[in-house]
Image (cartoon, rainbow over all chains, first blue to last red; front, top):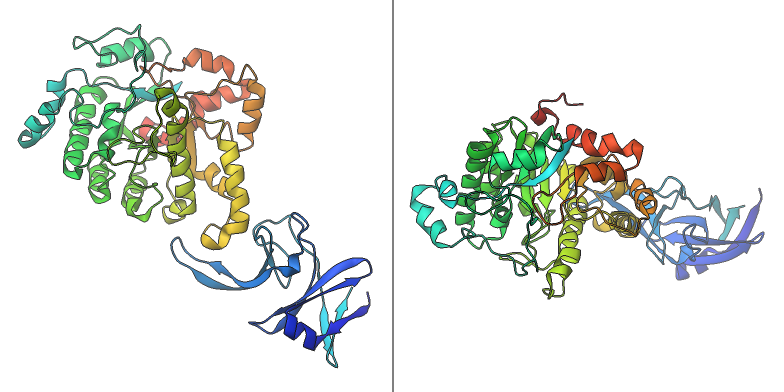
Length: 116
Length: 358
């Protein structure tokens, strides 16, 4: 495992997402604007291969029948079919067999580093 | 063997009217042979009933306990049979909720007086006016005190899908009384109800019998799951009757897949819809689809959604598309036979059949 420079934090802040190629794998760096956190996620949905990081990060909803409540969890909704993945763990909360690889991130001197 | 769908008929209308409160008796009498029930838009081309059955003195098959005993219970060695209304299922699509409540009450008392008292193998279904859910819940509580009533009976035809919150009092009352709710296809497009296909009424009975009856059952099934009815009423069991089965794997696969993408709309559904179905929903078998002798394929597909444990045998006596219990027994895979012909119904109706509840 080594750290890779995938771009400038300024670019991420203006674009919301940066897609980089690291050792043959496409990895997306997603800025969750609501929490300010940065997540590096394999840019391929395990369902149909969609560019997952072009999806939208939202708060997961829960609730009793007929009521809607915001959960703690932030999830990335795939841009194609809307399947949800936890931005931190990469796990699908709805399907135990479905997960996407996530990578540690670090910001140093205005650069984004990911561990891969 | 337990037969979960035996349609008992009103032969002697005056006898039935005797159970209607006096102030409304004349109104029901004056509505004609169907006693105010909305009649079918499509007549069966050659008759809704099996043509060879013995008729009662009123000229109606299946219209008294002797006929039903001789034609179903004795020849097929039926241990218990669930007696269902016939035209009376339309009570929930009558424009007047008041008349509907009266008819339902009379039908339940007629069921008790003319049927349940006649044979210890008979089990009743409670007819309710679904267009007035509070009145329906009250009727369930009144009638359920007699433990020979084994289920609440609703029609496939309805104003809205049954997951709508307005219908909750019905499901809550049933569960509170330990009764499953049976939803029997029929009456789609009649009275208050909508056509189940969304494109208006079909032309022929063959179209309705292929689509209408299955469509309403699919709609109620998906609605009950999506609204979280089984989360709101955890003890609830629903028995889907006579809506067909071959479509079930396809609909559940679609619903499971849609749930993954559309979950935020129904966030209270926290597991796959097909898992909810396995726990809470059962289906009667008649009319089990014929697929050119390729039963192995049909049974494999049904296994994917929980068969045989979700299936209960039903004959649909005295209707024209009756499934013969002996033929059905032979048709089923050996390891399904006892489950479908007996066990699933025993678990579903448990205490109401005088059996231990597992």
